[in-house]
Image 1 (cartoon, rainbow, N blue to C red):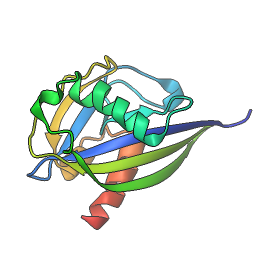
Image 2: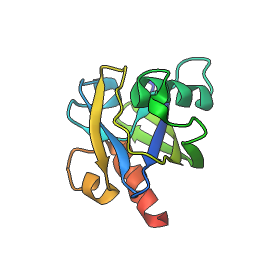
Image 3: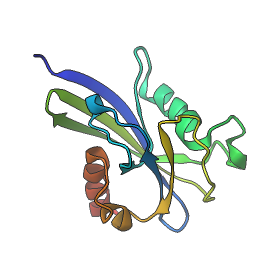
Image 4: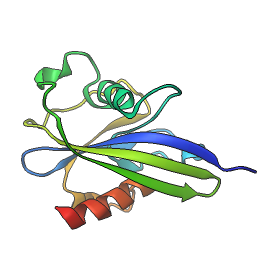
Length: 149
């Protein structure tokens, strides 16, 4: 059987105290090797015809802010400060993840529209890595990010 190819976008959003926005998966999705209770940064699968920037916009709306008011956060913040490409091979699935790193001035409480995820908290990368519940993509991205912070 041919490998399936999935493209996705992720957002690592830093608060002023260097904690990041973490979400918890609520639904198992075997094709993506996601299990309920896994922790990650917000990620979204790119839909056909979408650019990474379009997917990032949808991710901000569906998983981070939850409505178009953006909870008083200035849309010029978060400002993208870094963009990385990661490739993963998991069984029959190959994933390319474009990860944006950004900063925000406030630790708002997101209200995701996407009912597959919930707000886990603002947490340090070290503490998230100690949970034993990270998605494989998050673990790899956090490991690399720690090396450059």
